[in-house]
Image (cartoon, rainbow, N blue to C red; front, side, top):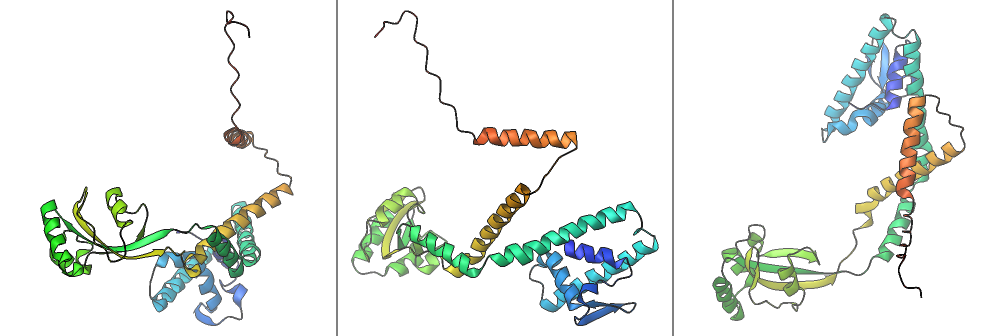
Length: 303
């Protein structure tokens, strides 16, 4: 189970006779362990650690599970202290590591994440929408049958005024659309098999095609509507844009911080592995050298 550094650091500090909630002393208390409080703040930290693993659990059940998690961690921390596991270099090494992790997470939360706003995401969205080329899409119905003779017979009925949707419900072999009168909804170029697409995009609104053969059988196609495809709404893609911006911002920050620090790898094995990887990346990103001109045969005629 994954752990955030803040949560683990809180648990580690608990072994030093501090309650898990020491950083949230003014929070509402939700439980106590031997008089030591667990607060709403503790639940919030625990949720950031394991909340995504709980799926769509009802809110109160989720809070109960988070509390059980915190109780176990506190009791295990106190048991570790009784065994004097909080003394010595091993504990200090882990604590120092978790402190750095916690500070890193706080920096990401308070600095990097705070620098990316909905307005920034909206600006990128608007810029990308402007770059989109207009794309036509159509809405159509179809009737799928096994033979050309069946398709021709149904076409005759349609030419005499029969209802397309009703004939689709009664005759179509396509289980995905027949109950909806053969409706395929809106679709663009490249979403249907070529023989079908070639016909449907040439139809006029309300027009029914002649029988069309594809790998699935014989189709009759009716064009319902034609329009320019609209981009997805901002609210639908906002989170994805923000995540992309956060990743880019974090990468830029890491590069900037490294450029301002003197990093020296002392371990020879690790240093060689890093150097080998850097050389491979540089080789892969280098432009290909132009081929050398072929040498003319010695007996070739001179110009």
